[in-house]
Length: 310
Image (cartoon, rainbow, N blue to C red):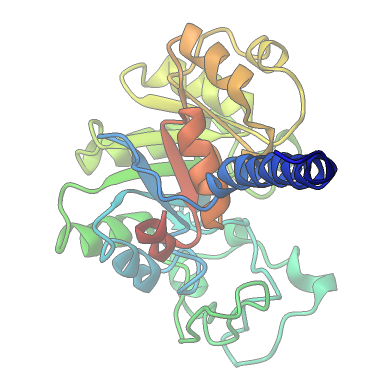
């Protein structure tokens, strides 16, 4: 090589090395980031749950929502909430009152925020509750939800309707109870639990049901009254696993926290205690993929139609 060409060649060589290094860095960064967008296969037995049926698509906790949810073959479990009527019927409802954002009075009038929590399900019979429309307004939080006239059904009615098309579906039933509500918005918690246990047994759901609650009193009562039932401990706080478990005198089969608090450490701790981990409520594909890669046992979602994209 001629001396005059050596500096030029050296500059070109250095530039190529630098370019190659940059390309490798960019590729490595993209490879890492792209895992967020790659499909992931949920393991066999993964528990996909339709939250309140499929709240993102149909009016929540309604028979149409549950029937729609089971159209998605990946859905294993239907999640719902229970309240109690004046005539001691189990009503499928997230609140023990009528949410003014999604419900109207029997005459079609809207429900004001001030009066909402005074129209209590526990003060109305199941027939009176049925007269309220909780679907025609839709839900502003879920703009894709179909608007249709529907009502808060009795739990037995929901089970019978779904069984006709999917007899083997599983159920995840949340007891909506609170110490401040005892005797006012629902029966005393032991009586509430007794009603739920009685109905589960009457419907023959013992082997198809999980009962969950944020209320540790309800979980303790369930553990005493029906030790054969699978229980899930719902968590909405940022306390440690150890702190939350100290509030119970038994280890529940399922731990169910808000999905953003789930990390690899929590997964490992649940595994060490032989607890399944089923976070709520996960409504985007990226988060679903992250959680599956972490090793959760199921996911509760308002959008079962997203499962096929995961």
